Length: 85
Image (cartoon, rainbow, N blue to C red):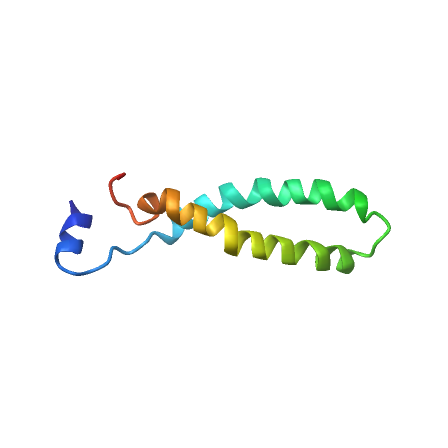
């Protein structure tokens, strides 16, 4: 009811940072783990900074262009604490 009242009053609901963090963690953790399982055996002899140089851009672009938009599209209602559509 609070969500409906805030929309009627012209205010946008305030998203829950904690809920967003929990949903992002649930999505990013398995992705990063899978990425590490793939990349680490292929870069076994590389120094850590070179491995990180390969993994970090893949993680960042995947989160920004894939994971975060999917979370907002499919679970945005949960993050802003409104009833499911």
